[in-house]
Image (cartoon, rainbow, N blue to C red; front, side, top):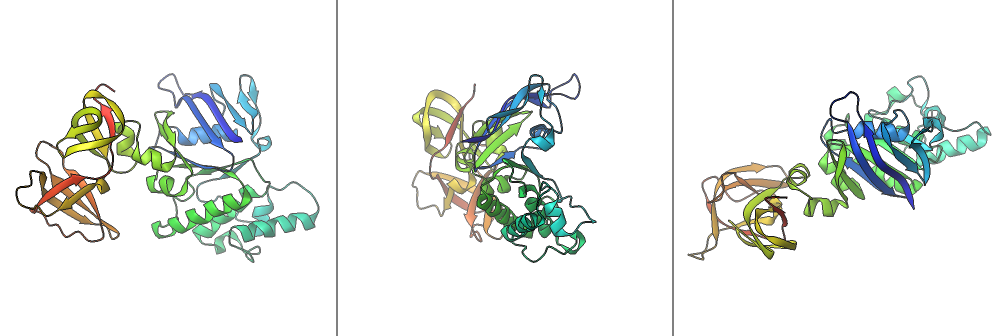
Length: 349
C-alpha cells in the first residue's frame, strides 16, 4: 500500500527558476522516507504542499490513494490526515505536556482522550510527564512530545521538517532512533526532510535525493550510497573518490588498477566512483608493480581516520578511510588497492 504519492509537483515564487520542477515521489505504507538535499533545493516547499499549507502551480498529491492536491482541487490541511513535527517542536508554552499531545484529538469522552494521551507518552518514552510544562523539558523531550502530538489523531502520514537541527550532536543519534521506533510502533508512514546525510542514511528505509526542485535518485540508503546515479549525487551523499579511467565491459582501468563495476558499461572514458573506505592502504612490498601513493595528510575523527594520499596521474588528493587511529604518517609511501565494486559514470553521461 502506498501512503504518499506525489506526481509532477511544480511551483515557482516568481517567473525565474521554479522551486519545484516536476517532482515525483512515492512512499510505501509504514516506510520512513528521508528527503535529502542541500539548502534551497525545495525540500520544505514540497513538505508544505503535502501538508496543504501551499498550493502548487501544477501536479498532484495523493494520500492513501485519495487526491488532496490536483487540478482545481485543494483539500485543507486539517482534512488531509497528516501529522507534522516542525523544527524545534513548536509546543504550546501555556499548555501542559498532556494537553499539547491531546490538542489534535477530536472532541470525545475525556476518558478515551486521556487513555490515548497516556499511550502516546509511553510510546515516546515519556510516561509520567503529562503534568510538566514545555519549559521543564529538554530539547530532545520536546521533540518527542511534538511527535506524540502529531501521532495522536492516527494520521496516514507524519511529516518531519528537520526536527533534530536544534539538538546537540551527542543527542541526535539517540533521538533519531527513538523517533524511528515510535513511528514503527504506531505503524505510521514518515517523511523526514533533512540536509544531514548521516541522518538520512542511518535512519530511513528510503532515501530520496533532491536537487533543484526534483528527485535525482530514490532508493534504499545502501543503493543510494553504493550506486549513486551521477557525480553530483556521489559527492553529496557521503564522500566520493572519482577515479578517471576507461570502461571495458564489467571492469574499468584506472590509476589504481583494474576495478570491477556494479554493472556492465559502454567502453569509453569516464570515472569509476568509489568510497574512501574502499581505498585500502598497506606497506609496499618489494617491486610488486602495484599502485603506490604518498601520504599527504592524516585526520583523526575518533571512530575512524581519513588519510589523504597523492596518486600519480591524479591532480586531486584521494581520501582513504581507516577504522580507529591510522598508522600512516605524512610523507609515507604506501601501496594502494581498491576493494569492492565501483559505479561507472561515462564522460558524456
